[in-house]
Image (tube, rainbow, N blue to C red; front, side, top):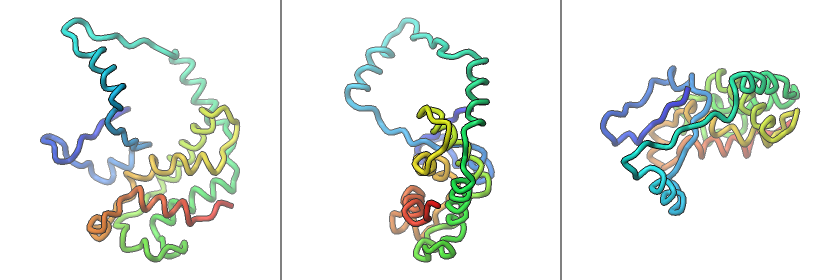
Length: 177
C-alpha cells in the first residue's frame, strides 16, 4: 500500500495516530521537482485528452520471486545487533552515549522499526545486486524507516530539531560492530 501525506496546514489532512504510523514500512520525503522535471510533468499532463496509461514493468510472479530473493539476502548477526542497537538508542539515548538527545525524544521507535529496518536493508542490498547487507545499507534506510516512528518532543520542535536530525546523531554515534 502507498499513501501520501500533504502538509498539515492544508485542509482535510490529519496526523495519523502513532499505532497507525508504525504500520508503514517507510516514510519517504519527496520534495518539489526540478524545473526541468516540472516542465516535463506539464508537457505530459496539461492536456484535456486521455492521460498516459501505466504499463506493467514486472509480472506478479516476478515480484513474488524478488520478495523471496530479498528474504535470502544475508543479514549478518552483527548487523542485526546494530539495527537493534540503533532502534533501542532511539528509546534510551542516554544508555547509548547520547544523554543530550534524551530531552528531544518524546517516543522512540518501536520493535517494529527493527523489523522494518532489517527488511529495508535487505531490499536495499538486493537492489544494489548484493547477496548480503552492509552497514551502509542499514544507514541508507534508517531515516526512511525511522522518521515516522520516532516522535520528537516539544523541546525539540522549539529548537528546530526534527526526527531526521535525531536519527543522524544516532547513526553517527551508535557503533557499527
